[in-house]
Image (cartoon, rainbow, N blue to C red; front, side, top):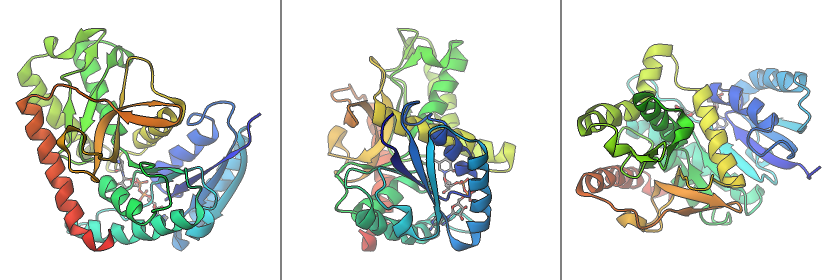
Amino acid sequence: MKAPVRVTVTGAAGNISYSILFRIAAGNMLGPDQPVILQCLEIPPAMGALNGVVMELNDCAFPLLHDIVATDDANVGFKDADFALLVGAMPRKKGMLRKDLLTANSKIFSAQGKAINDNAKEDCRVLVVGNPANTNALITMANAPKIKHGNITAMTRLDHNRAISQLADKTGVASTDIKKMTIWGNHSATQYPDISQTTVDGKDATTLVDTDWYRDDFIPKVQQRGAAIIEARGASSAASAASAAIDHMRDWALGTAEGDWVSMAIPSDGSYGVPEGLIYSYPVTCSGGEYSIVQDLPIDEFSRERMDATANELSEEQDDVKDLL
Ligand code: NAX
């Protein structure tokens, strides 16, 4: 049996974590031969609820779960972490502008960036789920210079999975028949779900669906899916967000399938003309615990406009938090 690795989850008493923690402990993220120690971080008012979650985790008697740490001290929560899933964030309240949300969360992520820097392993792999995820990741990265460059990422895998599911449904295939889906940019309504390189059971997706459906139905549906879930459920996506976080970390750690890629929001290196340093979602392949951007894809005018629009939104968000970078 391998030595256990330490996985920190913040917002551990929240809705997404109520699914994430159990999936990690069951081995869905790092494989059935990788024991884990869960380090659950919360804020003081949520420690009672977190205690209940810990009781339930214990009651599962998961063979891979070696230990659980429950704390409201970020220095304890990130101690020696190999992986960190930053789920905890302040939710958007009624009447709150996007900018107010950015400011409130920027404080959380600058403090957690410092705590990661001071306590986590230098090659700790970090996934930011809490919104606005890309810019929260930017703030975390700016405050954690010791962490290996590129290891602070944000989640667009839920958007990627939503896009696969919509296209599979439209073309009448299984989701496993869809390959090479891409989400470009921000995890927001400006994201660009791109099927120009996607295949459906080996055929070009663009030859199977008409352009009007793609542009007027598919793209907005993927962009607005989070709002549709809130409308239907009265609460934001939780189990599907948890599942996407597990997918993101699993593929990063264990590798993507041959002949396919996934979408991850990562620090831009300038690829595809995106300003360097923004946390931008790209198509990536993963192998040996590292990701690399899929290069040299053809970009037509329609794509270019959308890729630039979502990059511009990220640049504006970056500007709003520049004092913390
Ligand atoms: P909940 O409100 O259920 O849980 C959040 C938890 O975070 C709470 O228990 C709270 O006490 C805790 N928390 C707040 N500040 C903290 C801090 N400084 N340190 C540690 N814990 C802290 O929200 P939930 O539904 O779990 O969603 C969590 C975040 O994910 C939200 O920001 C949400 O917007 C975001 N999402 C991101 C998605 C993505 O695809 N990137 C999709 C789903 C989700 O909307």
